[in-house]
Image 1 (cartoon, rainbow, N blue to C red):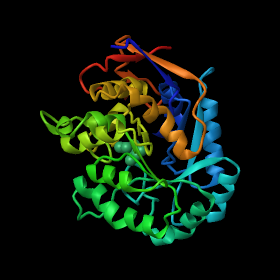
Image 2 (cartoon, rainbow, N blue to C red):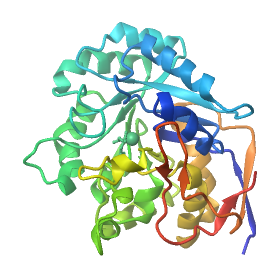
Image 3 (cartoon, protein in one colour):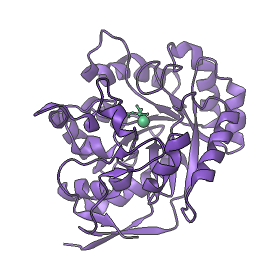
Length: 344
Ligand code: NCD
Ligand code: ZN
């Protein structure tokens, strides 16, 4: 049994860093990652190239001394997004992807897309220039049960979009169902899928049995165990189009432990040890590096990082919460130890 693990330094292909009082507090939690796709769902959202440049500057200004981290910026797609603004931002290297939130699907998504037809000119431009579209794949139709929203989104929106614009490079983010896994697996080279650490570990019983656990509440919501198993199979399959996107989504403790608690799990501080735990339990530690460090850069057409990191068994306890200017944020804890620790 190996006592240490050496990996090419990983990247996080879906991360919420927030802004203002919270930003500086949560940035150090992502220090083991070299780069991250930074989500644009601020209030107000990061919609234009100008917004992205300003947000990027705020992130860099808030980075602790010595933290080597490259934020890969995204634009929040709205029905008013200007295709030429997107193209200019991509040409400048300012943005790495555009994010599609169906309006009302999740935290701060009110200005998202209601009608995909309205954004077709932007998507066509992105297909032409090879700029990836990151998709929050859930319908918001109130008639559709929350546990079915991903499968219905595939059927109603994603599959038709892929047929209509096969050249568009699409990342189906935080895949949570077997349906999502199958869709990504059967898609061609222009379709990738990210998987979160918490969806690889938890099922909906963890959220709901023996009391409701607000710190396990996220969107897409946790699914049944058979789906979780499909996610683990995908992550450890060696298929290059599945990669890590933690969707680490910090909210102040008080806003989660509330009558109407926010969705989001703060996994960043301990994401890699948990991931090593999942891969080891699946007998696939040899595939961890591809999932965490190689597949993402390959999809985004970037070079893998040059540095390496090391994990050792057990080691230090992780903090239960992280202090931020917006209040303490509870760190992901499924109730047992990951058994691994990143060596600093
Ligand atoms: C995210 C957030 O808090 O911004 N929440 C979540 O549960 N994942 C939004 C998102 O990615 O859906
Ligand atoms: Zn997210």
